[in-house]
Length: 407
Image (cartoon, rainbow, N blue to C red; front, side, top):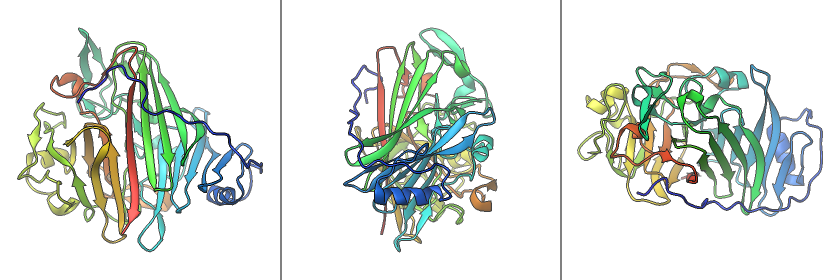
């Protein structure tokens, strides 16, 4: 797969004139979902809470204050709604997906992501719930890499390694944001400019992440990265899913299918060895739908190292294609993942340990799973992996879609 070459951005942004715009007080006693529902009927633009509506497709994007960070920076919540009852909330702290609410086979809408009730929860949390992680998603061995003959040192925050961009990664940054409207979709565009030297990485990196929701129940995530000096980058989303509904037990009964013939084995600190190994005949094989818990406790080296699944899968094919399907038998909910990335990190929530969540709920061991579309972990130190080097004049773009349905 060719990577990091100068290309034109793949995602041309269509602009439309917003219509049917009115104003109501941002301190309305109605809660945000109620406001969004009202907006869906009347096409409102909330003063200070800006709500826009696509008049033909009955989709809305609304904006409301979400609180202030410990340092006093205001944070907004962007609420995306479609005509089918699917709701996605995003905040510009960490570019975090705070919730995804989708119906089950009986039409019951529940949140299928793990998260917190307040901004303080997201600030204090250590599990990266819902966040965009970077500059480098996943691990870099011993927090070091060499680029163009120069060695760079990164913060060590995961055993002997650097994880998800270091001690203050993209998940803890305040992003600029604006609601957007496209033909057939609504969304929010978030931008963060990471200065040269931040967390040890070279070059000023500009990252634009665009979330969109359409009436096909597809949550799209588009990434666009540029730099003013040679650097490495691997940005992804770290949402934890439980298709039974968050707080409703573990995820071991979910049936997982990953279209990958190979994975990247790791050492006992979860750094890839450089090998690309076949999944055939191992508990890493999810080419056919298999319950997550069916083989998770087998005495297999990869599972012992991660305490379960926490590995990068080398996805079959190239270009934008379906790579994962997850089904939950009890609720009937189904999630399909499409991406143009070469890998996906399947993580089965092995380090969750009664994390306090929403509404007084507690998230126990293996109560959520992640599917992080990505380039491979530790690629800067693995010459046989797809390159994550980005140079001035190049634009890296990528797209991932999480599609929800029920059967």
